[in-house]
Image 1: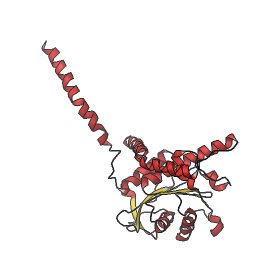
Image 2: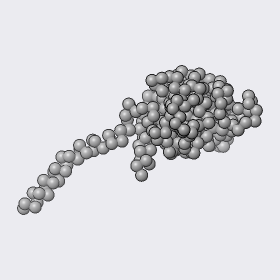
Image 3: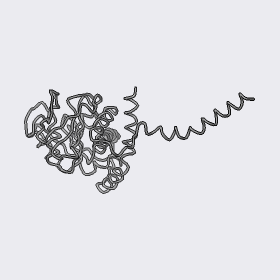
Image 4: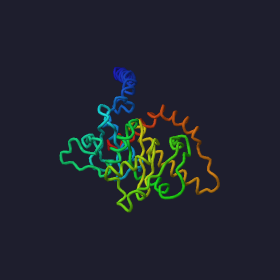
Length: 269
């Protein structure tokens, strides 16, 4: 009899604390934190895009310093999937590292520096070599918005051809003059393709720049599939793009929090 009451007491006690345990579990990862620093967002964003295959051993994510608009944050020269908070460095708008301490830097940091110089609205920049976009940078087919998640492409996607201004090069944006030329092609758009190289996405936050980098690649792959089917493709209009993009901005954290959990699970292994 005593044993039976002990079992009942243990079960009841366990049930009484179970809701508390479940309620506390999500806070261990804190996927919906709104106070994350730009450094944390760069680390998470880099790993998200690496997980999706948008970035591999190359490419980079940066953020404007919210406390000093004339500075930006970018990792040292390192594969995106390996970036940690300790790897993040501060740069001025000339592309100079503020405190290099012997660390190697990306050759193409001038993509970031010149965009931040020319576009005060931009708070984050992503440069990728994502496979899906490459065909649209070397062909005569413009990249256009296929669906609502890539609605930001409905405003148009320019292509920057480094050869037009600089002749035959190594294809890298490795000095300020090339960065300025790229910025001119980007204009006020959220995305610019780079012939034979990749693309650049910008946004008002790291979350948005990462969102755009991912869905630019997804859209490119879907458009290639649609074109292969033959016939006319019914793309989003600029008006539809503007309305859909406004909604995406509002619900952006839904994707970010999910992707952040994916990255946290990978890092925990």
